[in-house]
Image 1 (cartoon, helix red, strand yellow):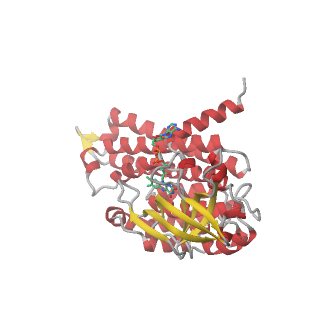
Image 2: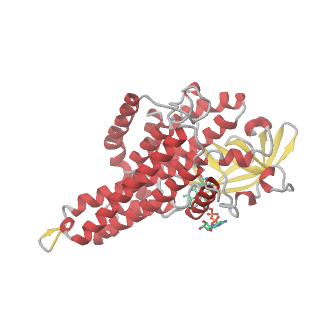
Image 3: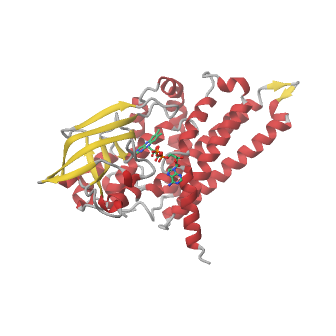
Amino acid sequence: MASAYLQTRHVDPAFEAQLLDSIDKWIDREMRPVVMAHDHGDIWPAQTVDQMVELGLFGATIGEEYGGLGLPATTYAKIVARISSYWMAPTGIFNSHLIMALAIEKFGTPAQKAKWLPMMARGEIRGGLALTEPDAGTDLQALRMTARRDGDHYVVNGTKTWISNGIKGHAFALLVKTDTGVDPRYKGMSLFIADKGLPGFKTGKKIAKLGYNAIDSGELVFEDCRIPADQLIGGVEGQGFFHATGGLELGRINVAARGVGLAEGALRLATQYAQVRKTMGKTISEHQAIQLKLGEMVTRARAARLLTLDAAEAYDRGERVDMEAGMAKYFASEAAVKNAEEAMRIFGGYSYSKEYEIERYYRDALLMCIGEGTNEMQRMIIARQWVKRNPA
Ligand SMILES: Cc1cc2nc3c(=O)[nH]c(=O)nc-3n(C[C@H](O)[C@H](O)[C@H](O)COP(=O)(O)OP(=O)(O)OC[C@H]3O[C@@H](n4cnc5c(N)ncnc54)[C@H](O)[C@@H]3O)c2cc1C
């Protein structure tokens, strides 16, 4: 497992089984009892984060040479799905962090890797990915944040929004324009490591959300912020677009795994409820209308899991997986939404009560269709790659 890249990694099956067992025990003993209070209060889960550091999750996909676990995408996806089937939000805290780490591990200079990756693997600093701006989400090349070289620093100005870990995180992979005049626009983009100690780097407002509570989504404001030139990832301008999107395949496998967890979790809750709730003298699981729903839900959850593991396995073999990761992300996120909605119907009026958990799955699932490339874009990416692989 000495590769500097995430791909072509393998794990000893016994180690994986032991790791997944520890995660299951942690979920049951520590995480499940605190979910409702943190979600309803939108409270940052400090204790859960500390425990995830202890479990090694902040170093899950960082190479062993930097102190991480060096896990393959397959094991990582299984972990993410397990946690998400009970509470999806915490997986966003370490995933944003790990996508930043991936950009450094894949594209950083030796000095950048040596400085940042061990601290990130130990969870001493938590990272995030700062791409989106108020006027640039899907169309990343439209972003306005600029970085101008000034001696051995860059002077950065602009605002990022919707940044996961934005308030509680310590450092971010920051996508900016170092050249605003070049055509095509992506050639003028560069990715920096921006840490909160830098003068002129301020945290803006925390965004109130429909779901995905407890994890902070925030604004980052840069006013004449001076970033040392040696924090330009890779040390070369103009590569930022590729550096920022180079982690998206793993990011999409992660979102797919979150979708799997949500779809399976909604199914689990609905299955339990349907066998307890009685109408017309029998449990609702005995009514054909509910059986049709459960039959579709279990099939959908299974298909989402298989597509996600298929993409993760291809990633671990070192293959190009934009189509496979796109299909997994698209299908699993839609499966999460559909299963959550069907579970809401199975719960009847109680689905609308905050005393039951199912409403959280419904709120959280909707985000999966937006993050790491919207599902509208996924279908276009899948189709383009499909046509390319099948020339007339
Ligand atoms: C809770 C949350 C957490 C987030 N975390 C992060 C983070 O950590 N870091 C970060 O950088 N960003 C983050 N984001 C931002 C997220 O990545 C963007 O919201 C997403 O990329 C979509 O961009 P947008 O919101 O600007 O929508 P837009 O790009 O304005 O899109 C609006 C609609 O138009 C569609 N559309 C746009 N362009 C096309 C096209 N060419 N063809 C077809 N359809 C199109 C979209 O699919 C969508 O339906 C987060 C967002 C949320 C809600």
